[in-house]
Length: 331
Image (cartoon, helix red, strand yellow):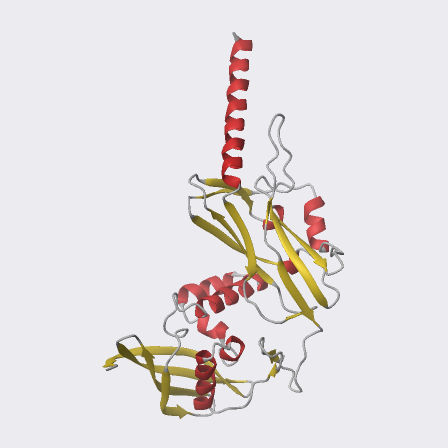
């Protein structure tokens, strides 16, 4: 009897495992794995993080399940090569983590049909960048974790492979005479240097940049950290995060501001604008502006009050409020 129960149990385990593999294989071709730069900008060889957004999309009619490690380096790997197909070496910290004898904690993620799951990783956590140039980036996600050893009779589930990204690294960042890093325009490669503009010209600069979708210029005079931590909940999160977590929070906030569907106050493009009033002292100031947003049959009017503070002799936008003023007929 015991032998019979063991035989039945083993048979059931086989069929469950077989069914899982079959279901995985049937949906695998309809599961998309894509990567893109989370905050596309000019990257330098030894400074700024290179954040990549990883997205898994389930286009199949069945739920897609996989294991995601708390430390993502046990779920995903990046293959980064030069144009001569030389693979870049792995980061020392990554090698130490993957070779030490420690338990890997994970959770099971279920992606329902026609839904997506995304997370963000820094390429510098995976490889060593020691030279400038152009590189090809590809990622692999391992549904059963990188260091997991399949049990006896368990099929090995292959990794999902992503699209390719082209990465260009420039020489180390240039600092101005005052020690402040110089921003660069993604479109032209020209240096963007903060100037000692009065508050009304700072707001004008920001709005003109938004009208032309020049994001590096748009963010040049925005103090994102101060703007983000005005919210009590975000401030608590900020204080509890380490340096890397704070960088990710800022990038996520920046991404939010670049999406008018999420933030339609600061990110939406004004058709026209007019500076109505400017008040400031040595350290603080406000700029009131009338912004108009043209729709197909009417024009929406909004009054913005931008709050500015002087930091390192530069006026920076730290907050804003919006008041609706009705509409105008376009006829």
